[in-house]
Image 1: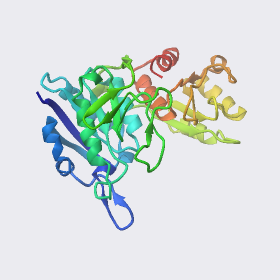
Image 2: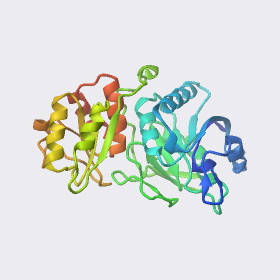
Image 3: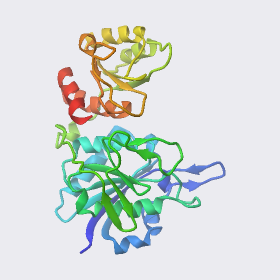
Length: 327
């Protein structure tokens, strides 16, 4: 018996069309996209929804909040077996992690997109859509939370990173590896991964907007603290340091952030390095400084977690526990 899958389109390169200089993302409708995958009719029954049509660089948290509510509504329907979200790849890491933190379901939620526009030679979008529907129809992915499916690979929203600007194999999970792979019509689970339920599931989502401002600062040689101070003067409630190595930054930035942490600003040390955790109290005395460390979460995912935590009134000590549990 065919599964009932909801396909929600938000735009992205996958909905793009070539122009004289490159391509325009977020142009084609979900109906046009699905026309390029006629094989779907033999795979599942599906409901297609055009939620929005933008490049994911223009995604924002107000739009994400509405997307989360739509996904939750669909998952709450007993006749729905899974959800596929078509999304641009630029901010797919943040969108999937946000959804994974707040949506309450064991049904598969599968994000997909493409690295080549629909009109390009060897467009990767049609196969990615087919594989995403296949994944959303799979009993094997129940309880895995939100996942990303591109290039025949399935990654957890918690661990996935975009690693290449143009390659169709851009998504990787350097910490845990892929959850599953798809070959033909077969899904092979390679991980016993199970979703870690966050405390924000089924939170009052409509009350979360507007989120507090949280900014990311990239670490580099002779980094200056002026922009960090300016960020706070403009209302930032959290600072994510994408530091060097184990989340390290130079002394002047540390001193600045100690003052900010003492004033109640959430300061999180993450790393610009793609692989490996940021370890607490290694070279920097985080306990003394009042800092939080991100563990395995990337700077961009750390920002998402801090925004939700601050908005829901989580204390600094509890925020560090969240990173241990969810990162």
